[in-house]
Image (cartoon, rainbow, N blue to C red):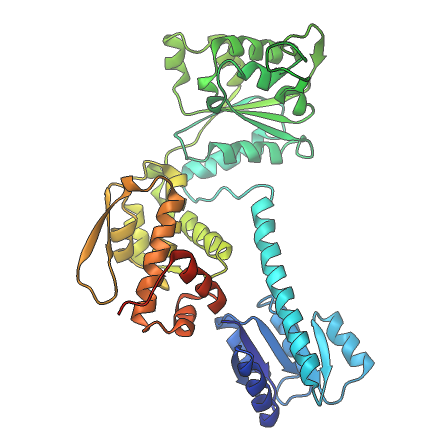
Length: 461
């Protein structure tokens, strides 16, 4: 439910605004001074503030200024002594709008609606900016992570080629991104190629491009990844899966800084810094005849090994907390606390899927837990070595259903199931009081109605 905070030292004004706004289905909080209003903003999720300017103890403009450092909640300033100068000052300090007393009901409601829409847009914009931001931080306090960061700082400004090794999901791609971001090529493109995801017969066309008519499906000329990355960085992920024929051409491109498109004769100059990554032991692959030794030595001017998560458990608390904040922000819900016991339980898990698995586990815990993630929730929902998950059928039942993870084709299927069970449980617990349930789980009532309709939930008789 949308929450509006009223800060005004006149009780009749607060009472009138409360009646109007509650009639419009808003949740209303009200206080008679700025200090209490700021205290609420620090601990409560507030969507809009209506604030008087002339108040005892603390002036409304001071409240507005202090609130800027606490939250992004839009402010509507109200006053019975309004002037153009006051309105301009309020706008300059970040207020959404300024209304004069006595308040016009229609203008008030329109302004409230517009301010709330702006607040939603600001939050959505922040989420989108996080999603498209350049590169996430490399999180961790362990000695190995500190060494990796130091190596990146030393190596990135050079033109040295780098080979990054480590298990799947350990963070090799993030290291590659930071090598590019801290290099002189940061303003040029970083082009990524997953060598394991491209069929061997197409890898050469993907890397070097092709001319029209060079093979059956080549209906037009195509620019390859080397050309696309010209002046920037080419990241060859899972290079251990590249075919030997493609390896030979990559070696030539590294030696001569020239490529030739498939089906073409003209040599094209390229200026590319190559960073490669693999989860394989390339020296063993060389022994088995699957990888060229000369290419290995060309790529491994600098070697960076990213250790698995199980070898740096001291990093789990900071990574888990960061994921928790990020995921809750994406869901537009308050950030859940991970208790000390839960964090210790997370550190004790084997983490065969490394950072990628940890993120999925945190997302699962956020969905299935209440306001805090405790050791109990970790034991029930986040143990990667346990093939089953126990979830109660409903609030009044002592039965338990053993879920086999194998029946879920994707993580989204599991999320939908868990979300449905969680919402159904909360609705039953609250006697199907939709407003109370929406408040309990921290979503808008309209959003909850949408979920009820989506999952086909019905009140049990």
